[in-house]
Image (tube, rainbow, N blue to C red; front, side, top):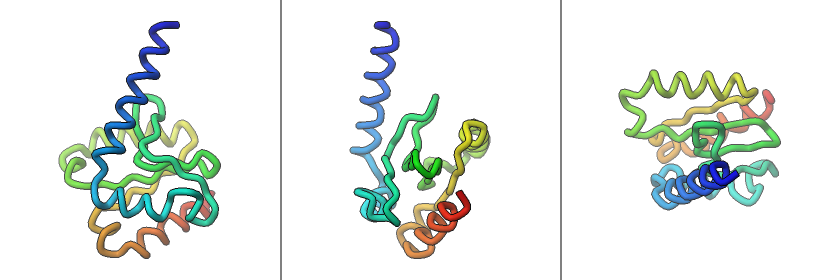
Length: 119
């Protein structure tokens, strides 16, 4: 029991760290997704899902939204394995580049809206 409590505390600590160090694109996207502002769908940010953290996650829509920036360069194998794990868990994934979020926000939001409709 102590091991599980320690794991939950470490996940919570890591999620808080990730929220505090959000990129400009993540901050912008969060202004649209928070408080059910986006089509009435609830999203959480930096949500632990198994061994991974989703940038944004809607449990009711079973949708993960990822904001991919420079940290993802050279990590395609990791991202592919992560996406495979999430899909096996029954989740859909929308990957948006930070550039798309920052420079064509409406198109990025429309991609999320389309994914929600497909669910």
